Length: 600
Image (cartoon, rainbow, N blue to C red; front, side):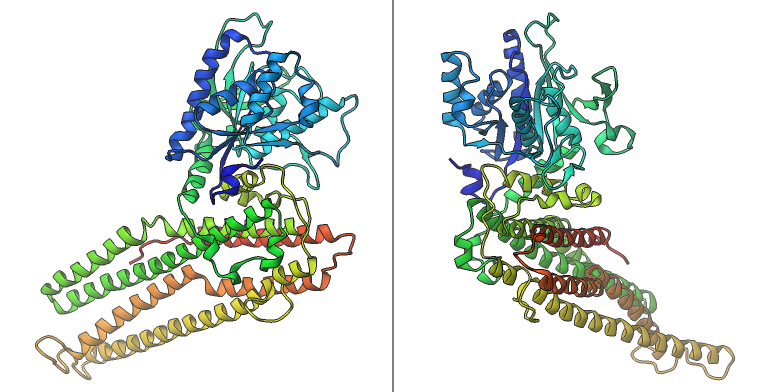
């Protein structure tokens, strides 16, 4: 089995999960189904596509899991069966032939069947915890950590099991990451990256009145923050001890909307990755053919994100210069109009200014917020590259666990994208590590195509040259401007004390005097100097040069430490990838603070 949207398209799916009770009161099924439909429609409305790229993760237990899978099929939503054990053993947990027949039907329509591994394998089971409870807990963790939204068909009461495998526990995993992960320990995830659609329902034997209704839950951490995520919310406590607290809201949370809309935006672009130059590929053709489907998936999206980022960067640079030229034209036009009184100049200058504004806002800006897209897709590109190289080194690690807290806030959708791409029975096939080293790190030369060492060596030189050139421009403009100011100041002073009279000196045409020429040049050069300096500051070549040289030293160190036989090799790979991701996060934060604006 394979998940069609992952293997046969260059789209990232939006992943939703389900948890809930097996013994839901049958009389509630109709109302629960209606609430599930509303939940799916909330997501589909944001997708704006005929066939939404949604995948449902379901444990296919009786009750909540199967009911949600049934509604998913109504909307042509693919679902993945996430099982605690091999299918034959899982079938023994069903108590009659009708239930088994229903299970077999759902399995036959599943996009894939995943047998969950030990996510918490570095940590001992809780005292007295049986194997089944442990296995079902792993299912809950898998669904929570891969989903952007979790349907919870739940009575809202505290857990009855003390072993952390009930519906309440899975809700807590989704909201607060209350689980431990292999190689990382307690998971310090981004609160709200998996919101919960709570559909309140009854369990058999409950005895209460029917009260099926839905609401969305967010982590209680947002309760103290005056931000958008916490608006229109109510803090609720699910137990007497106050351990299970969360925020309840009637609308789809903003953080979930952002994850969905950013993913849909990325999916709306189509890139022919097969035609991309081999120099941009992360492995040679021979090694690439040896990679697993999961690794090929990462590589395809790396090529797509890299191409999209490069395209948006070009638009962004055009926008930088467009705004700089626009500002200079406005300022120069004003100087000529003010100094010479050329009223007629307002017409052609006004037309030029309007044309420039139209070009920016109609062509560059809507081409769809090039600055934001350039940064988002660059961050996605770097994350995919790091994840790919970790995987082909045979290391089982999610690079998003190395995101800094600021990165988790800035690019939460990327964390969810990497989680979505890791669906299914993934394989971290180890490729010839010497070849991986040459492509990832390089061989120690300064060629731009020689891995990251060569890339940063060459880019450091290029960005250094650009920084020097732009510094020379700015310095030259500054010196010229100061010289003009000095000349004007001296001439005005000499005129003031009566030594000379240059007010009408050197008349050219009717009003074009030397004095006015110098004044106009002074004003224009001042504006040009300021605007070029401000515009080039957005491109941050000097900052890029420094970062290039720092990263060059990092890869030089890594080349000297690379040893596949080293018992700490896995940690070396993870540390190197983490350094790349953190550096990208610092760059991203800097660039987010340097968005485009018109400064006149």
